[in-house]
Image (cartoon, rainbow, N blue to C red; front, side):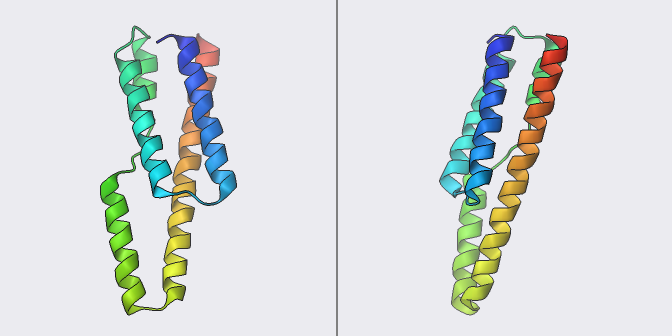
Length: 122
């Protein structure tokens, strides 16, 4: 992997995050695929001949979203729906969406910072 390809991928990450955020609705399947894509990118960077400082900074990109979180969240929604009103389910889903969007915004910020670092140093 080259610095140029790494930079392009980080740009792709920011565009994807912007797309998710503008939709105001992020599905579990999209997030899982996105998290897998980021992990694959990190592995490619670590296996490349890029500078160690850049590898370290790419490895610090933090976005973890797993199937376990999806299952737990779905089970909680189902139990809540059975025991409480639909308003609470609506509020919980809205809070979950807001948390996802905040996490994605944080990832976008990290990617932008890393892109700036690359522009200044490579």
